[in-house]
Length: 101
Image (cartoon, rainbow, N blue to C red; front, side, top):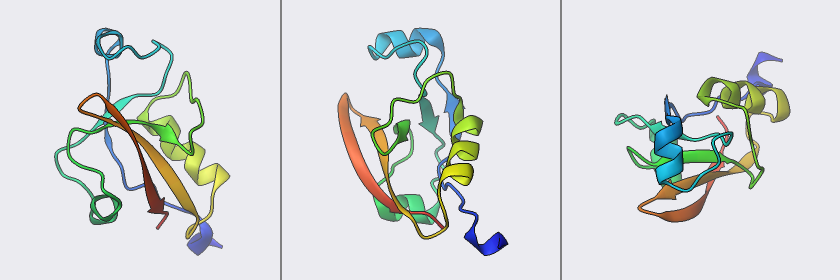
């Protein structure tokens, strides 16, 4: 059964309340900056270093941090599921498809 548990290949530090405000994001919204080292599967999906990760599958995820998102994906998806990573890059919102490892 362990092979069905997905991993989420995005990692980073949560934005501060001031950073969220500057980006016109809700203080409650999940938002973290992708680390400079990007996992190969995330790179293949189009995720770049310093992208702001906002969530998955266009769901409004609030009161969550980067670690909570990892657990959310592990509990709600299976390895091999295709999801959409919601990203903010240079002021533009992007929807990047990713198959969960």
